[in-house]
Image 1: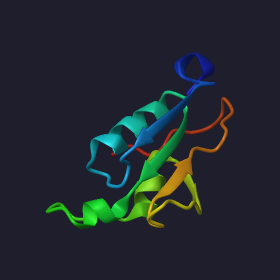
Image 2: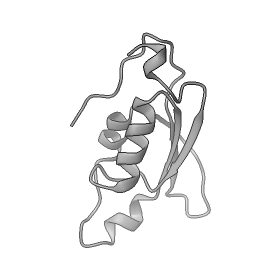
Image 3: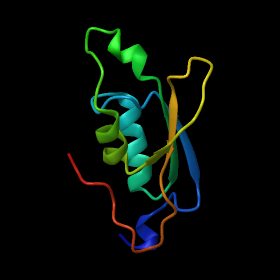
Image 4: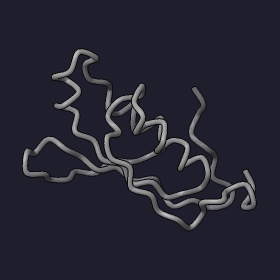
Length: 97
């Protein structure tokens, strides 16, 4: 992808609810990253684990968006935040579905 094809380059987006690959948050975060934005995602996997659809592999979720996750603390101790690495014009987009 060339610079002119990255309309969100230099922009940062925060997307919450990115804890499963079949969710809206994942789709939004992935598209923002594909368009060049630096994406910060947040998930709370225990919520999904309690739902009928169940949880997902959080490492696969982060990889699908192209984010790297660090240890973060939340009041519950279960949430985490991930961010896309800085990109240059030669950065490749996350793999497609």
